[in-house]
Structure formats: C-alpha cells, structure tokens
Image 1 (cartoon, helix red, strand yellow):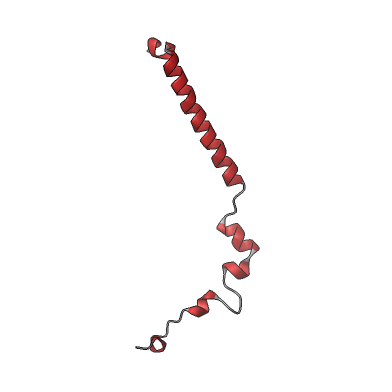
Image 2 (cartoon, rainbow, N blue to C red):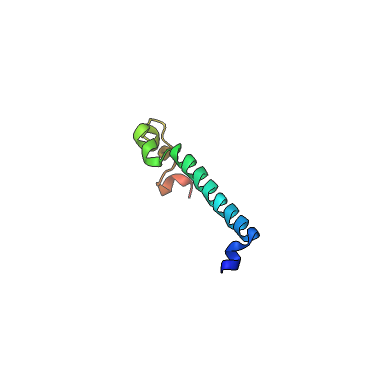
Length: 70
C-alpha cells in the first residue's frame, strides 16, 4: 500500500479524479442556484400555471363523446 501511494502516476490520477468531482459539484451548485422550481413559477404566474385565463388549454379538450363524430 505504501508503494501505491508513493507512486507518482497513482497520485496524479487520484488528483485528477478528485478535481473532476469538485468541478462537477461546482457546476451543479451554480446551475441549481439560478434555477426556478415549478412551485415558484406557479406562485409568480398563477394564471399560466393553473389555466385561469379565458383561452385555456383545457378548453381545447372535450370529454363529451357525442362531439367527436362517433
């Protein structure tokens, strides 16, 4: 084990793996800090999130079987 940690190639490999993990963690932290959750969007835009407008997407779908031509 002492020979393994004394090996320069092994130490360099461990260093680059740890550096990669740290870099991925930093990128993830930055991307999450600037993101908006769906709950936050719904709180800011309730008319869009809950379809409370006159031209709602819910109006495009009907559940009446007689109106689909069958």
